[in-house]
Image (cartoon, rainbow, N blue to C red; front, side):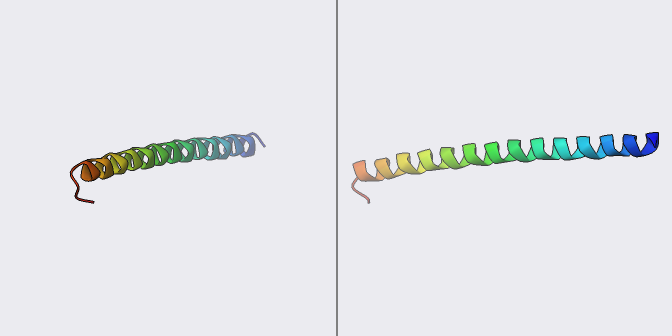
Amino acid sequence: MAQIEEEHKIIYLEIKYTSEIQKMYLLIQMEQYLNFKKLLKNFQMFLLKNKRL
């Protein structure tokens, strides 16, 4: 019985850490997306100022 409880604890922790990693990955992806969006907007403004768009 103790072995089963120990295995359940291990599985629970694996699931917990996996979900934490996934959350961090999503946050990183969102930050990269926002940075890219900002870069694109800056580039568009640059092109407009130089009459190339």
